[in-house]
Image 1: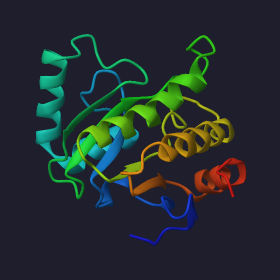
Image 2: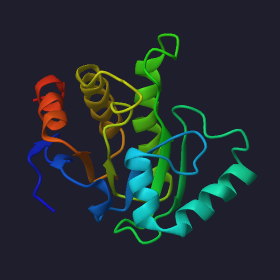
Image 3: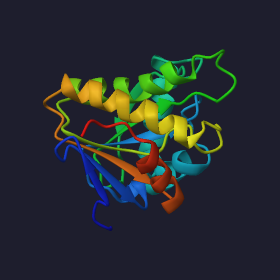
Length: 185
C-alpha cells in the first residue's frame, strides 16, 4: 500500500490512492447498494475480498432490521470477514439526479452516520471510498465539497476518531478531490 498523498485536519484526514480493501483500519466503509447483497465496484470488491461472512451478516441485517433494503444515507455494520479491517460499515449513497435535490444532504449523511456508528462501536479509524461518484453519477467536484465540509464538522465534534482515510481508485479522482476540497487550512 502506498503512503498517504495528502493530509488535512492536523493529520486526521489522509488521502490515499489504491485499493480500499487493503487498508488495515478499524472499519472500511462500503458504498453499498440498498440490497446489501453485493454488487459491482467497491461493493463487489469488498464482498469478494472479505468472503462469505460479510454476505451472511448482510442477509441477517436484511432479515432482522432492513427487510426493504438499507435506505439512502443510512448505515449498518458487519464483520469484515477476511479483510484487513475487522468491520465494514455499509452505506447507500444517493443516485445523482434522482433524490429531488436532496443529494448533498444524503451524501453528507453517509459520512456523518458512518462516523457516528463507528464511534458507538469504539472504533477509531475508518477508510472511505468516493461514495456515489461512480455509477451513481455524483459529480466528483461537488462531492469533494460535501465530503470535506461534512468531515470537518463531524470530526470537530468527534475527538475519539483518530484517522479517516479517503481512498481513491484512480489518480484523477484524487486530483479532483484535492482541487475542490474545502478543509480548513
